[in-house]
Image (cartoon, rainbow, N blue to C red; front, side):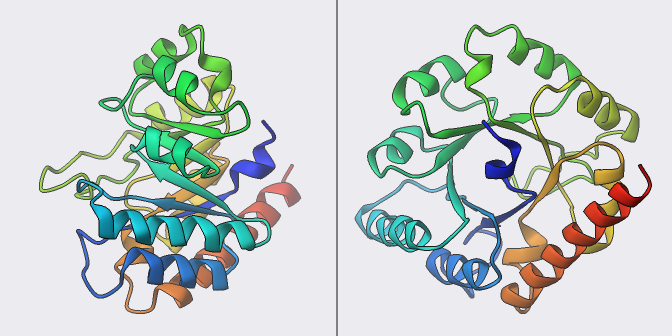
Length: 224
């Protein structure tokens, strides 16, 4: 899978950390900002109302140019709704089962928290179905719930970037000010939750994050 399709900026929707905007509203703002990848993150059971909203989101992203919709955790829903792909964590459906459920062309992203987890992933006979890995939390995060996840050491993060045959998407406490630092360490791109979904103006935040990513790419290319 081409890294281009994976996208350098993933904006993550959420209605647990904030209540002002729905998933659909956040997606609309991300699309206006021309964000290349939107991750739908809903840790609650998907009831009929949420399913209807998600169907509408899938359709709206499908109509947009150069944007992918990744559904977090809900593998069977991603397959059923023909989303662009799915992102799975270490406690979700296994890569083997995910690969069997999804169509060949659908994207699979996997959360990685250590070099040991990456080695385990690479030992899977299905590792070639992975399109990118989400690595972190780079700066720590509360987004998994009330449980604080400590920041990953820069040494561990750089090690994973160097080991990975997949594009690395950094996650966990990413802000526009931190985009360059993680990309300079080897990340292909960044995934942002709080700095997007919890921003006063998510559209403006997405635009600033896009600018930070483009600036980082230009700066890194000019130094090579």
